[in-house]
Amino acid sequence: MRNLGFVFAVIFYAGFTLTCRASTLYNVGDSSGWDISTDLDSWQQGKTFVVGDLLWFQYSSNHNVSEVTKENYQRCNTNNVLQSYTGGNTTLTMSSPGHKYFICSTRLHCLGGMKLHVHVEEDQTTPTVAPTSSLSAPQAQPLGGGGSLLPHHSSKSNYNYPSSVPNLISFNFTFLRLLGLVLLIVL
Image (cartoon, rainbow, N blue to C red; front, side, top):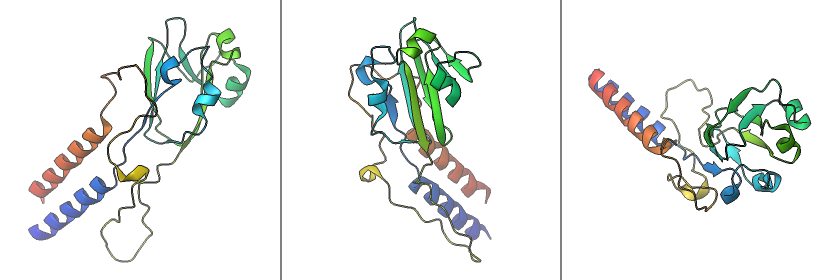
C-alpha cells in the first residue's frame, strides 16, 4: 500500500512540474510607461496575453489605473470602475480569460488615449485530459516559446522590475516539491 502512495505522489509531482508555464511580465507602454503620450493601441498589438501573465503599469502621481467595463472603456466613463489602483507602480495578474479594459480615470487623459484593452486567452500549456475508464499518468504537452521554463520579458527597458512581483516559476516549483514531499511522507 505504501508503494502505491509513493507512485501516486511521484506521478502527481512530475505531472504538475512538467506542465508549469512561465508567466510573462508585460511592462505596459514599454519604456514610456502608462502615460498619455504612449501609443497604447500600438503597444498591445502583436502581443498574446494568457492567464497568469502580469501587466506592470508604471505611472506618475497624475495618473492611475482603473479596470472598467467595455462600455465605460469605450465612453471613457470614470464612474463605477471595477477596480482602481494608485501609487505609480501597479502589477496586475491576468487571472481569468476574457477581455480586460483599463483606463486612467482622469477623463481627459482617457479621451486622449490613455486606455488599454487586452484579450486574455486560456493558458494552453495546461493539459486537458479526456475522460478514460482507466487511470493513467498526466501527459505533459510541449512547452511554447522555445520550451524554456524561464520567464521572459516582453520588452527591454531602463526600468528595474519591482521586487514585489512574485517569481511565479520559483513559487510553483517550490510549492509543488513541498506538496510532493508531504504526500511521500503521508502516504
